Structures are given as structure tokens and as C-alpha cells.
Image (cartoon, rainbow, N blue to C red; front, side, top):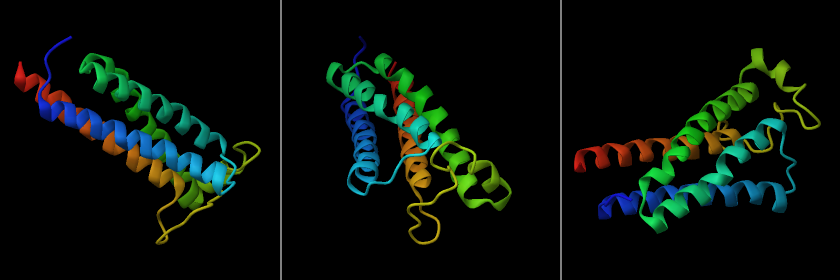
Amino acid sequence: MGKISKRAENLLLLIWAQAFIALLGSLFFSEVMNYEPCELCWFQRILMYPLVIIYGVAAVKKDLSIALPGLIMSGIGMFVSTYHYLVQKLPALQDTGGACGLVPCNLTYVNYFGFVSIPFLAGTAFIIIFVLHLILWKEQKEMK
């Protein structure tokens, strides 16, 4: 376990908070608003939910090596969310979203301001986590 700076600790907590807020948001949409998640939503959840544990443990133990899987998972999550968003918004891909499972992946429950949908929110969370982790990684390299 290496020594991490106070800024790195704060970044870990910020990343954990972002993952936790995304978890609460997805549970709000499914459990409170009763929006049935589609297949791509489930993949995004599978990639997001463990990040809460990964970054939480890394923050408590003050060990960045524990958080490395989070960088990989958030990177994959960015691509899944981007694809899901494109399935919802691009007419050329909307036909493929209809055969996604019991709940079509091109179904848009939320459409704030004409562009903010659930995959957009998930993608934003994955991007924030990914970028903050890269900043954290860069800072740790400079500290060595």
C-alpha cells in the first residue's frame, strides 16, 4: 500500500460519490418511477454498481491499486452507455434497439431538454468517473 496525498483521497471520495449517486439514480428510476430496465440498462448497472464498492474500499484503505478495475469498468461503461444513447437517438440504430429483449432498448422513459435520457445520465457518470480516475492516476505518478 503506497502513500497517497490528501488530494488523491478527496478524488477517490469524489469518484465514490459519483458512483453512489448513479446507483441511487438507477434505483430511483426502476423502483420509485417503476421504469423497467432494458438489457443495455442492465449491462450499465452491472458495470456501475461494483464501482461503489471498489472506490469505497480504495478510499477507506487509501490504496489506489484496489481502484484499477474501476478504471477498466468505467471505460467499458462509457462505450455501452454511448451505444445505448445512440440506439435511442439515431434513427438508423433505432430498429436494432427494438429487438433488445422484453423491454426495447430504444424506449425513452426520460427525455429532459430533448437530449438527457437515462443512458445519457449513465454515460455522464461513467465519463466523470473515468476522467477523475485518470487525474488521480496522473497525480500519483507525479508524486512518485
